[in-house]
Image 1 (cartoon, one colour):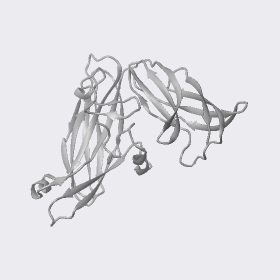
Image 2 (tube, rainbow, N blue to C red):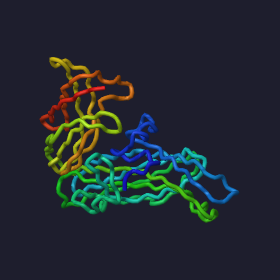
Image 3 (tube, one colour):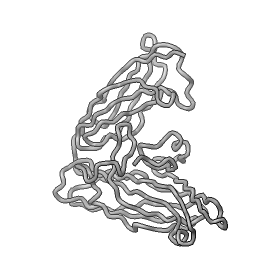
Image 4 (cartoon, rainbow, N blue to C red):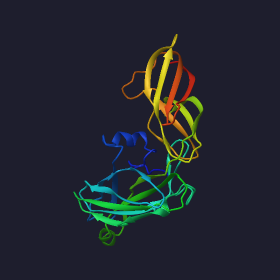
Length: 293
């Protein structure tokens, strides 16, 4: 399952449209807008529901045999009650960073889902109110050190009373809080496999292929510099902060022109890329870019 089009909350797989909808605190919270359509003429044709979920990502440092409890906050900013169902799920990322849930490998080597319990599994939130969904995480005593993961998938819909009262009610809304569990200390190891230039949605991107060969999750930082002529820098960009899961490959896409950036003039450019994964050495690569209008 990919992130639904109406959902603005799946970390690492948010579409360009969804990014524009997110508030300034997008790293820790997101809204989901659900249109609930009803077939009875005596009820309005649609009700707009707005729910905020925070946080969208939880990082847990743990030791074998330890237990921790944390909470996710859900706020209903809409004008109608919302029923929220919470369920645990394994998840994965595609090579381009799109979260996968039902399509992911279940109970894989880095799954922490069997370690987690969530309560309550279902709650109805009145307009203007909020609710807490807590989860407890117990790490097995004999587990090998590494980067594990699980997630809480929140499904949104009308209360059960509305379902009984109305002949036909449709809804669509889903947000996931992703849980990263870092057990013990694991040395990181990664390499830069390739740096290329691609057209993505009519925009030029530099795409770095990163391979994480270690058992821990890594996150990217760094800079991309465009140089022209005799090595004169003409533009510097920031490498996005994205996860690279254990023993996996990830494409890190860096757009060369943001919303406020002017188009690059025609010419030949050298691209120098430095990616910081928190390891002793940076990953360094370069490629060429030709701009022709």
